[in-house]
Image: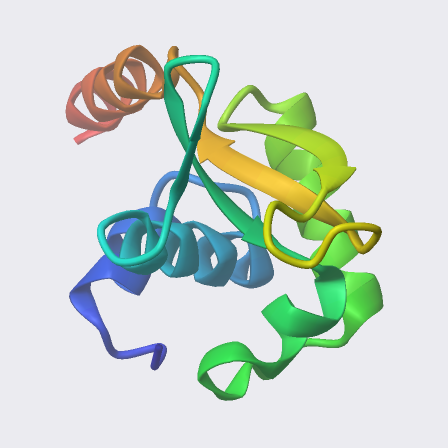
Length: 116
């Protein structure tokens, strides 16, 4: 996922940091390819080290942890820590876009239009 991709630029205009934008673009990429259903929602399952190793990530695990925390606190994503469905005891982050994300994006776009 390069910084030139349209998904990265879209998310960077909405979320608080480059790392958070990279993570959102990464979730968008994996959402259609490799998800697991739980409680009626689709989740992307990754450990921090897997996130670090995917798509030549330019960020450290510590930066990714901060981005996950910021996105969760901002209501952009939901995160749970649970066993990996295929690897048993390995505890992984289950990540998904928040139910309120679309409303949050609409609100940000309205604010942007008012400023310009």
